[in-house]
Length: 138
Image (tube, rainbow, N blue to C red):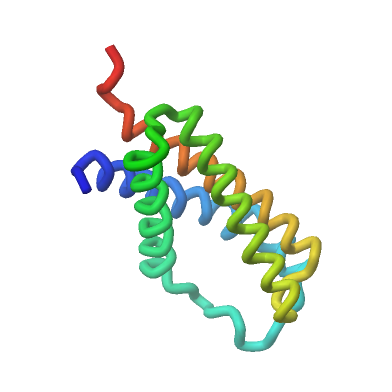
């Protein structure tokens, strides 16, 4: 693993954290509370922001490794497209499993979550691709 991959992961992790805060923490918080079942004691208040950041950092490292080692992604556009696909498919899979096995999420909540994941994953993936390719073009 080289420094560019680590820098791309850091940039993607910061992007993911900030966008997640904006989208889930501000824009969608009330909407998701309204459409999803409320289970007493399920939600931490306040959430552990350090662990949220580390989670996004690990996810961004996965993208950076995939982009650098196997997909040869080094532009914002290709990173955005790949990030949107990966995040969207992962969110669909996870939300379907939650719908099938728990009472934590509604169908509407799952759909909103998938769209939010596509946006955050796409933009973070774009940043990761951009950082991986920065300086490589003449």
